[in-house]
Length: 93
Image 1 (cartoon, helix red, strand yellow):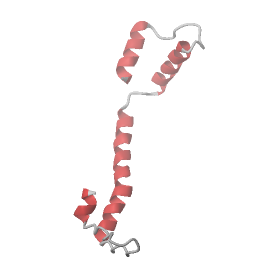
Image 2 (cartoon, helix red, strand yellow):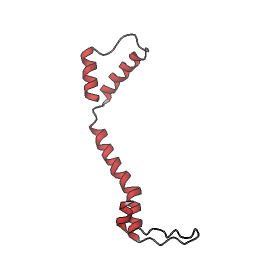
Image 3 (cartoon, rainbow, N blue to C red):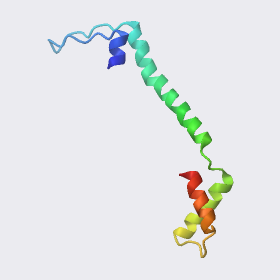
Image 4 (tube, rainbow, N blue to C red):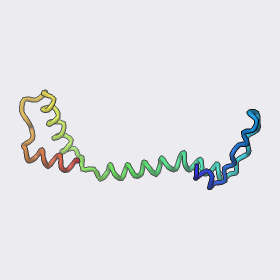
């Protein structure tokens, strides 16, 4: 709302239900485009950077899957030692 006010948004009169809404300036249209398209792009870039720095590689993924299969009861023995499990939790959390 503040962004649109800053861009020059003209509020409808609202006195009559069939009143023609005011024509908005080009700056309001640009502000709406930035909000609808620009903001999600900025957020996606932020999430991409965060995901790239997350330490989950193929080797760690395999270890985690093996541990989870054991935890669910689908494997007979724990594939990770106590220290290895602590290190895995520490690096992912």
